[in-house]
Amino acid sequence: MNDRKPVSVFCLAEIVSDELMARKWTTRTLAARISDKENYQIKVLALDIFLANGSNDGILLTDKDFNDFAKAFGISKEYFENVHKAWLKNPSWREPFECPEEVLSAF
Figure 1: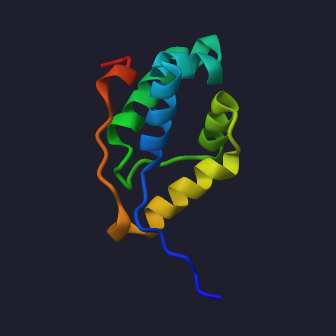
Figure 2: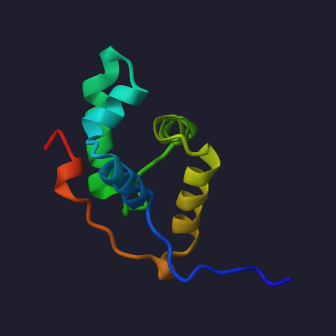
Figure 3: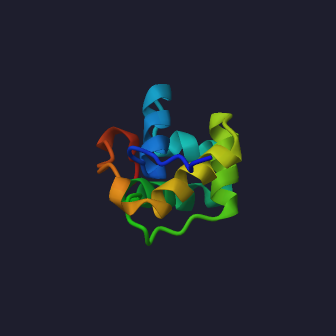
């Protein structure tokens, strides 16, 4: 069987941004769902940085990040991991992404 190859891949920041827009959330809403009160402002800032720079390969995502997205959106952790892996593995198939300002909170 031949390996399937994507026609294009999307950065995880675009997927998260689309989910936020579909729910009419901002990064503040998302941070409130995945952080405690002590880390809320830090999480808002981290999410804004992630979304604003998500197409940069230098953005480091951890297992906790994938779990947080899964918890907040009710989608499997593996979905987020697979989107991110496809992005990293296929640089020539990437679609450009610019985060819509309406989902950002801190800037």
